Image (tube, rainbow, N blue to C red; front, side, top):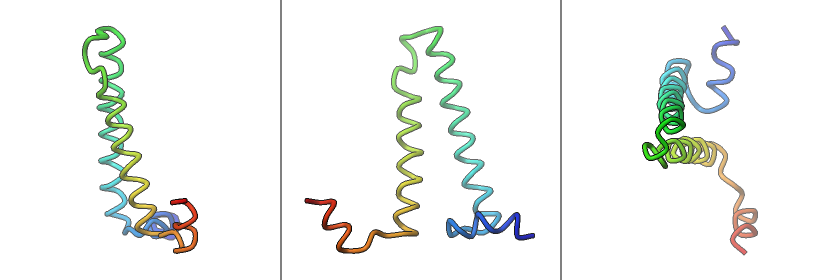
Length: 81
Protein backbone atom coordinates (compact mmCIF):
# COMPACT_ATOMS: atom_id res chain seq x y z
CA UNK A 1 0.00 0.00 0.00
CA UNK A 2 2.92 2.32 0.75
CA UNK A 3 3.93 2.18 -2.93
CA UNK A 4 0.65 3.94 -3.75
CA UNK A 5 0.75 6.55 -0.97
CA UNK A 6 4.40 7.46 -0.38
CA UNK A 7 4.90 9.87 -3.29
CA UNK A 8 1.44 11.49 -3.10
CA UNK A 9 2.03 12.06 0.61
CA UNK A 10 5.41 13.65 -0.10
CA UNK A 11 3.68 16.30 -2.22
CA UNK A 12 0.87 16.85 0.27
CA UNK A 13 -1.84 14.91 -1.54
CA UNK A 14 -3.88 11.78 -1.01
CA UNK A 15 -3.71 8.99 -3.56
CA UNK A 16 -6.90 10.15 -5.29
CA UNK A 17 -5.94 13.84 -5.20
CA UNK A 18 -2.61 12.95 -6.79
CA UNK A 19 -4.37 10.82 -9.39
CA UNK A 20 -6.59 13.75 -10.37
CA UNK A 21 -3.72 16.24 -10.51
CA UNK A 22 -1.44 13.90 -12.47
CA UNK A 23 -4.24 12.99 -14.89
CA UNK A 24 -5.04 16.67 -15.49
CA UNK A 25 -1.35 17.40 -16.13
CA UNK A 26 -1.24 14.45 -18.53
CA UNK A 27 -4.30 15.67 -20.42
CA UNK A 28 -2.78 19.15 -20.76
CA UNK A 29 0.48 17.59 -21.97
CA UNK A 30 -1.39 15.54 -24.59
CA UNK A 31 -3.16 18.72 -25.72
CA UNK A 32 0.20 20.49 -25.99
CA UNK A 33 1.66 17.59 -27.96
CA UNK A 34 -1.29 17.65 -30.36
CA UNK A 35 -0.84 21.39 -30.85
CA UNK A 36 2.85 20.87 -31.58
CA UNK A 37 2.08 18.23 -34.20
CA UNK A 38 -0.50 20.44 -35.90
CA UNK A 39 1.91 23.37 -35.70
CA UNK A 40 4.61 21.28 -37.37
CA UNK A 41 2.41 20.92 -40.45
CA UNK A 42 0.64 24.29 -40.28
CA UNK A 43 3.15 26.72 -38.72
CA UNK A 44 0.57 29.52 -38.67
CA UNK A 45 -1.59 27.55 -36.19
CA UNK A 46 -0.95 27.17 -32.45
CA UNK A 47 2.13 29.39 -32.58
CA UNK A 48 2.32 29.83 -28.81
CA UNK A 49 -0.15 27.28 -27.47
CA UNK A 50 2.28 24.51 -26.47
CA UNK A 51 4.72 26.91 -24.82
CA UNK A 52 1.82 28.50 -22.91
CA UNK A 53 0.74 25.05 -21.69
CA UNK A 54 4.29 24.22 -20.61
CA UNK A 55 4.60 27.53 -18.75
CA UNK A 56 1.23 26.99 -17.06
CA UNK A 57 2.13 23.47 -15.91
CA UNK A 58 5.56 24.57 -14.71
CA UNK A 59 3.95 27.42 -12.79
CA UNK A 60 1.53 25.00 -11.12
CA UNK A 61 4.36 22.68 -10.12
CA UNK A 62 6.53 25.50 -8.75
CA UNK A 63 3.59 27.03 -6.86
CA UNK A 64 2.81 23.63 -5.33
CA UNK A 65 6.46 23.17 -4.30
CA UNK A 66 6.58 26.61 -2.69
CA UNK A 67 3.31 25.95 -0.87
CA UNK A 68 4.70 22.71 0.56
CA UNK A 69 8.28 23.83 1.20
CA UNK A 70 8.44 27.62 1.67
CA UNK A 71 11.95 29.06 1.60
CA UNK A 72 13.33 30.18 4.97
CA UNK A 73 13.08 33.94 5.49
CA UNK A 74 16.86 34.55 5.25
CA UNK A 75 17.05 32.51 2.01
CA UNK A 76 14.14 34.38 0.47
CA UNK A 77 15.76 37.73 1.34
CA UNK A 78 19.06 36.73 -0.25
CA UNK A 79 17.26 35.82 -3.49
CA UNK A 80 15.65 39.29 -3.64
CA UNK A 81 19.02 41.06 -3.50
